[in-house]
Image 1 (tube, rainbow, N blue to C red):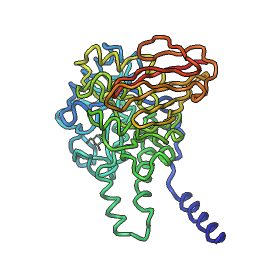
Image 2 (image 1 turned 30 degrees about the vertical axis):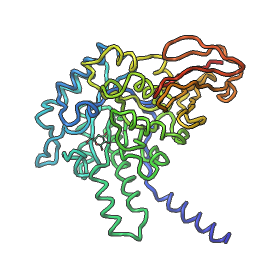
Image 3 (image 1 turned 120 degrees about the vertical axis):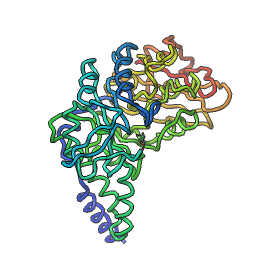
Length: 399
Ligand code: GAL
């Protein structure tokens, strides 16, 4: 028995050693805090145009979002046109001049993000990077791209087909996926331009355990979000247990923000924003920035909430406990401070509390209601409050 166990361990270590690893010196230096910015998909989807992206860049500046930290302006799927005879990819008519767009974005103190897939086609069936990785990376660099979202899409089918043909090689699909990311990481690095690599494969094969090794700076942990409390909360609260895989340069990504897209209440959007901040999640807004209400601006730009997400310690928060629909989450912050979220997933308002000792701060110097900025008091070592339906009481405890 013992012999079998040792042999099994040797086999699995051997296999792990063969797994492709990106030897990138650039990747670990990027995204020291979770990336912040805007992406076109959640609001504009396939209709996005160059004008929309320019308007988003302007709005980031005018609204104050850039100065609050939202610097990436990311075009998602549907910018791609055809490849010419030498394989160079061109844009489609919605994006007449990518170089000019990159310059426009950079001139405003912002950064430029783009989208592709390791397969031949993107999810919306536009041309993608398979077999043209270096050519595409060079093209992005020539446009001044700073961030690439690399979405599995049609490559998933290639992996599944190859796996079906070689059932004896049980690691084949996974190895192909890793290789495809390493290939793009190396192509990006080869351009000499520091480009953040965002993996999007919906959490397949526990990507959080190997996403950093293939050169990813962030990786989606789930399928797509949508603008509903049900989907947002399923994804957000489903992140329990992933904290140890995140840190400076490599983040879990529970998908982009829906704040301001209109189908959740302000309370629910505050829950969304609070949970993403406790998760040290990338804060990539997905609303129409040129049409923001003051309420939306207040949620996206609450500096104290952003500071929790962007805290220099770079630790993701996790669930402390859950009793039915009442969940307590906490995130360690620099200087021994801690952020605590009391979340009420239920349908009625509820009184909730946490004990200071349960979040590891014995003698707090200050207890702050993060959304209102009001000071709070602990009673008998307990912090308490009424939390509305689908709402949150977000607290910062400073020693
Ligand atoms: C999905 C991805 C979305 C969006 C979309 C574009 O696979 O998860 O975030 O990028 O493709 O087609």
